[in-house]
Image (cartoon, rainbow, N blue to C red; front, top):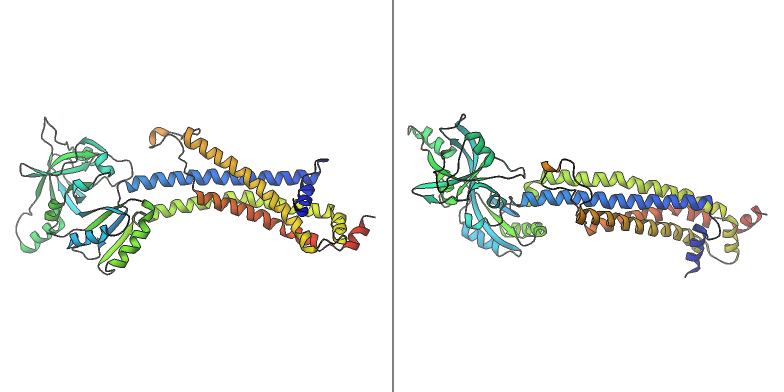
Length: 420
């Protein structure tokens, strides 16, 4: 072992005696351990909640969405789809039509309800949470006996008294009146506006904060309803890797006309929500980092006391030919030693607690019956672990700069004479 490391270790922890300086140094090391462990646990829990919300949202929202900047949607959908499918990591593309309409239902206390109608291709919705979370009925939007199908939310159906069709009964019938149809009727004085009738075939039930006023019908019916023949509102893409969304967005922006098309990732679609969650994560981390910062100040005090106590030894070392650079290295090694041991043990404790929670759910959530999960979620990100370890280690080394500089400034003759 290098003599500088041997001297640094001997100054910090002597086997023969336990001094006040050793106790203060031990307290500083415990502070580093607690700070690092707390940061690892809190960041892992924050990441767990972030991943949970993201997965819930992405189960409904697309990974990447291409929309038209114009008011009348986009044409030539097939060519746009081919361009999107040629981009690496894109697994599927589905066109959709979306707009607001007035829902009319004779049996409801409030017969007129403004809703969001979304026209989709059911065969391209595999994996979508709406299809998988059907509370009643099935996701059937096909035309049967001349009447197209519609799928509504469970809460909307409860408010309006809607029932889906089944083998023993006919589903409730609702009418939809779009803004384009109403405008055409008023401007051309055509009398009563045409109302397209739909049969309720299914009711979906989601717990992801999805707008309960969304209803689904077929792509062709939505195009007819909003008077968009051979045009769609946008194209939604599914990727083989969610984390490649930004890369896919950049490639699509390079291939498409920026004035005609807008490209958004899953993060862009709920940007305000994700930004708030990231702000909470790093805000909590900054607060907990104060624990390590306080421990670093203790390191400054304890190493300064070591310099004062070992002043004569430092003078003797310099008289024996040890350079000021090596004296400085001895005390920097002390800060590094405290940082390595404290950070290492903190990582072991923090990762151990995080893994314990992840696999055994030791800490349950209060009122878990109101949530989708029973215990606090945990997701360990390697980047966060490296950042915490590097920050804690860096603070410990920085804390040793002043004591190291003070030790290197000792004059050998004066140091030896002071203790005579």
